[in-house]
Image (cartoon, rainbow over all chains, first blue to last red; front, side, top):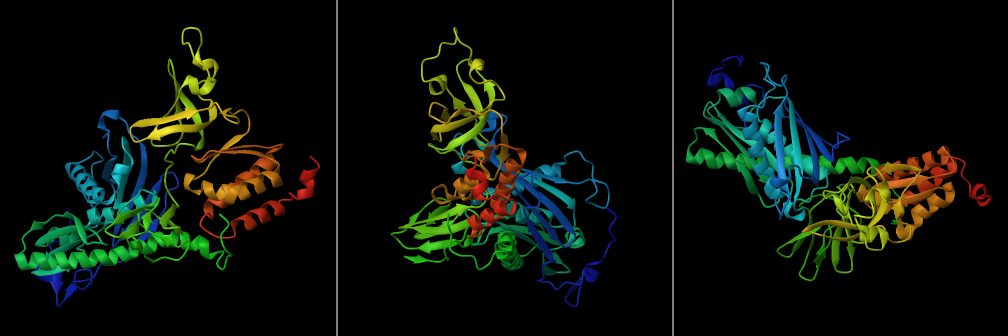
Length: 253
Length: 237
């Protein structure tokens, strides 16, 4: 990676981060639902410089059949990065990291889905990172949960995800690529916001116990903010069409 | 009991719809403690003491009694496999196609339905443990010939039918087309000319797009009128 080697002081000085944000500030997020017509459900997220597309298929027939569970559907996630998504061309071959993130994202989404409703079938989530700038796993989870809702997959709740990093001894919300790579710690967290149930919690780097607890609080607050945006994005899709005919009379179906 | 939504409000997964002990969770909902929550994106409604959500998205999940349109994808020795655009491949047994016993030595299933044939069938049985079983024995079921097939989102089929068939009967009457609706989202249309069929397809596309809005029947009626299909034109036939 050819990123400039910033010192910790450059990363966080006088309450301002390298990209001009405050410590407790998310990057600008744009969410769009139903962007692909061939998929059963889809979503697109831009979080800072991250650009990620998610397609959901299913529940559908599962092949090969031996993977099927007799009592529930299985959830299959595929996280892939485009060759052009990072500074230095990423090899198109599936990497160890992609495989691991696929697994981790599956684990973060599965608790929210009523898999028991569709025995012997599969729900497939395809995540394509078009541009990466740190925190792609969280952005992927946020978008994938919208795509699942768009596919009509029954869920207990949406899943929102957000990371907290540590630079220059200060906790920062939603770290970008530079802060992630040069910072002292990084802690992604995924949340089912209604009951504040955590479905993913990872950390690398070092934090004290107090820092860790504060980081959890910050991440949860970040997730709640993202959750609001998720709800808006889902509702907007239908309200746009409904508003064209606003003031309509009572229903006939 | 307390209800937290307006009639036909758009609700999202995890949204609390109602609270109380006597209220029952219907389709598209689930219960947690004494709360009823939505599991899908859809329109929330109450009927009696049941709260349910009419989904706006989703694949077709077979239900006994549904009429579906499917494609024969495999002919086995004593049964057909039918693709009904559901997570499960459906099975059609000769007993349910012929109404009599079938002898694989004397007869060939391909003479009845071959791979690629499009059939209208009814779902006889389906549960968590077995694939859906079809029948084509009743009137109006069986192989489809001619016409065209249109695919629509299965969750929006109820709007195409309308209350007690009001929408579909209006479309049939005003366009003079024969229409067969499969609950799985496939619709078969056969008209006297291409223009009539195309008008039906346009109506279907508009219903699919605007399924969650009100006053839809009137707008579809207007669409058909605009395209010169007046009632008197059709009375001549």
